[in-house]
Image: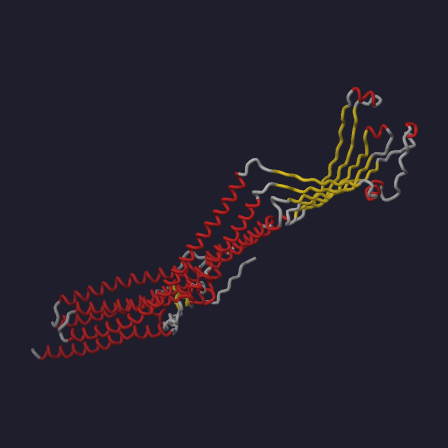
Length: 556
């Protein structure tokens, strides 16, 4: 009867050795996968095989995700319209100096009554009927100095009038040309004042480009963060699955030991509890993987036309963990203050606001305008002196009509009827509340932007310093967690040996397995955080786009 337990003991010893060898092989898997993780070797198919869920798998590198995001990200797509809209605003402001051609045609047919006295003097006429054609056209516009101009030509043709009919004349034709200019001398004078709208729109456009750059920078950082978080989630799931497998192996061993009577039922119950706890951890870890996949799909807009994201993303890149380079804090902060797009955007907005200050200051001046006009006039009255002799009235006869294209045109170009006008217009408002209010508001806006710039500089300096510390801190975490993982692994092996000889319990072994799983998760978390901290430093210094070879292209 005593030989049978001895045989069982030898069998159990062989099982323990086999389980120990299997446990060591399983425990060595995290070392192998982590070595690949830290040396930058891509892992694609093994991840897909271990974490596969039956969904369609799509292997993606970080470069693939960045490329897709730059094309499909909706935040970038929305922000990309802003520079184009600003371009249109610049064209609108330039259009204020475009010349305009005008033309007007009017036909008049009117009857004017005459008073009794005039009727008697006019030989009994009671009214005057007039038929006229009025044609005018020309060019009008303004230039950057504030000068407004109008060049016009008009024609007044009277084919019939009671008066001309009374004298048996042939009607009247009148041509008039004029060039009129108005030049402000105080208010609205000068190129700087009158081109304020154009230059402010150009500054706004430049600011919108920096705003787009900021959106791209933020999106790029979000893509990299989402990618490495997915890598972490998948590796964490694998670690949880390995921990579950170790707990299941311990449960199987303890059931054998219970059958041979070397352990109490409580040890099996503790092992079963350990398996259940780890099953729950696997469920949570798998959900975290799917959450990370959704986040990556969203920031890249990977599936723009689908509402069901039933896709397993398999990252093909692994984080490369190398010692950080030597950073000089002053140099990194200087780079951040020089290249951060949100600061450059504010500086452009400040320049636009300063332009508005100069414009509103000019509007405080009174209006003093120089007005000038010069023109020619030509007339053809179609009068026939043979019908009504002016000599009978003792008046000289008019000269014979011109012989040319048209009598009125000949008269126009003869220069005999030159007209010119020169004058000034002065206007001083009784009160300047509106203008002073505009000027005060413009100054306050400049002061507000200046305060925002000073505040943003402080934020950028703090951000850069935090990013620098993050790189150093996370590198130290990587080294520390490596050592902790190694210690936990050795402690677990020692505890298993104690358990095999009966000086430890299943509860103790499970506790050491928990500590190893936590150490592996901490090591993986530190690794991903270290990679993200390097990316965050590039973001904080405004050099992430340059480092990832992303060039800003603004649609016209």
